[in-house]
Length: 183
Image 1: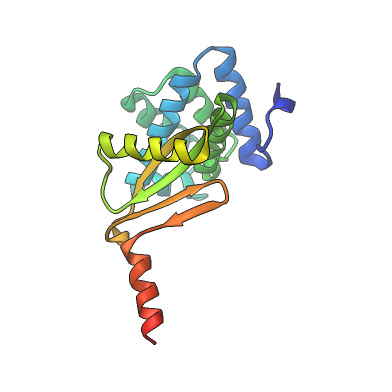
Image 2: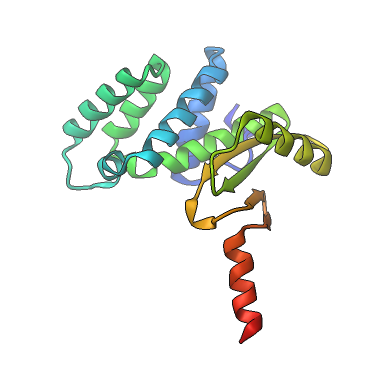
């Protein structure tokens, strides 16, 4: 099956492919996808967790125990906890966020959808998120999954990335362009 999965290369790609295949075999793709999104959000929101996964100084056993405790507390499924445990055992936690992105890309490809990374100054409401999904679906001609992030530095507006395309309508960028044109 792994030969059917295109676009997953390198260390993170190999792990993401393996997770996809395990989740597909166990019919847990949706559960694992939710787990991976939750883990990514936890890493984004916690500087301590980010330090834990990136630090080469923290002992392997400590990383494994800490990740197990965090994931158990968060209610993450056994398959995903086992996967993260293997990643920690192999001292590859530094690549976990990349593995998550690769997994989401593989899943989207197999579902016939594209993934759009949408960065906004404030958290999007469900109505706004749905409007963005609908607009992107109409523009791209295929189902588009929205991966929403918040970056308060944008001040307002959105930055949308789909594949190699990027649409930047943020106030921060507009102010920078105005500053350059005034020089």
